[in-house]
Amino acid sequence: MALFGNFGDLYKKKDHLQYVNDYSDELYEDENGKTRRRSVYIGPHIPIRNELRNLRLILAGAVLLTLILIAALVTALFLNHTTAWFFLVTIPLAVAAFPALYLVMGVMHLPFSGKPMQRDSYMHGIVRMFRSCGAIIAIMAVILAAEFIYRFMNNDWIFLRDDIFFMLLIAAVVVSGIGIIMLLRAVDVDEIEMNLMK
Image (cartoon, rainbow, N blue to C red; front, side):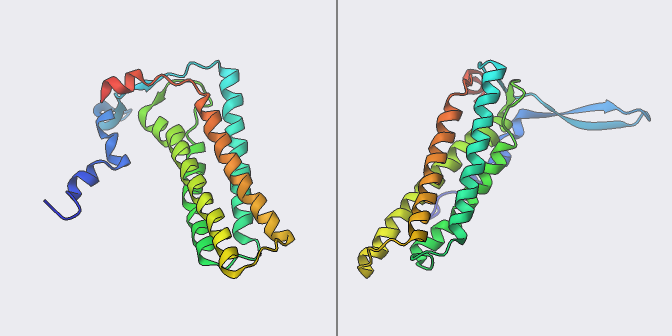
């Protein structure tokens, strides 16, 4: 047994390999008579029970909150405030850009059509957005803790205008993240078929 476990097992759990069994190769003949190969999805289709109008309103709200979250995060990243150069604030703020990028990527997979989703689309859309919001909220909690650590270490409890604006931006990121999670939880997804396919 390796010190850090079996790296082969770790590699097998990667998202891009998890869905290989959901596809099958199929041979077909093109217009020139040549035999070609294409991938056909054979995995589970995850139905959505919401009415299409309500679903689109929910997803549009999630997209709007994503835009607010990204705008607040980018503004906070470039704002000049008291703790702007404190490494316990700056590094987590920069790290938050990665789950924020995944959050934006998740928006591209949201089921605005209301049709049943393929497993990979579901995982890369709704589930990815859940995880990204959770990570962003956790990072914002670290930043808020670091803000007070800095002020305690330097005995600096004066909050200037940009300091207050920074705190409001962090709060906006957290509230937007929670809002996205709550909206996506309102999407009534039937995961029974997916669980049967495991």
